[in-house]
Image (tube, rainbow, N blue to C red):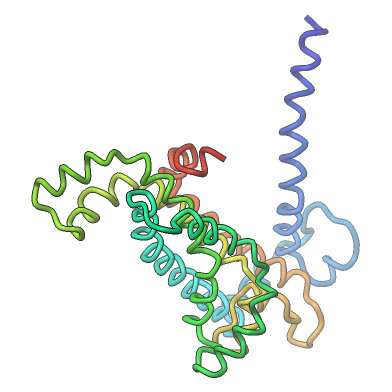
Length: 276
């Protein structure tokens, strides 16, 4: 029994070690956010001796920090909406119709996602300066679409291929037009895939730094870029304030996972994500 149980116990240790590896930095981020600057820089401490909410109050009452969250929320939401508006009909077309160069175009969509954002920020800065999109949340959302739209198309195309063509034919026989078909049939059936695509678009836009930082200066600065400024009022790096901002930055991602949790389980096992 002991010889058979030992390998099993060793296998159980793998997720425990991995979980600890992932959670310890998050725990450290959390406890430092409740410390004072003096305690955070004094040495190793596994729990704040005098917990305080002043770091969170400072962020929630400082316009620079709060607008960072507002700007990030606006352009991320806009990016998700634009990505799905473009990706849903494009993915449906790729899944239903054959045309010259369709496979090459589909491959190009996916290959374009491999382009580093650092390669694009210089031409985008010049372009945005000319057309007046610099320091605008809409400009950041459009820039992020360069990366999120190809991924959304790639994910959704696999879902639409699994939807029987008979549904399309039945819908046409019933007299539904393209808009009614999309509203009443296609979107409800593909809701898990759309939820997964929205999740990936949201996370990619929320955590992206290079374009968000390069295309904004003051008014549209997102929280991911504000995190890199000196957090303290005197200009030095205030660790507890930065950690508190980091904790607040994680919350929207957790909220997104909560709202799409019903779709993620089935969505990640279907389409191209499930066949990876």
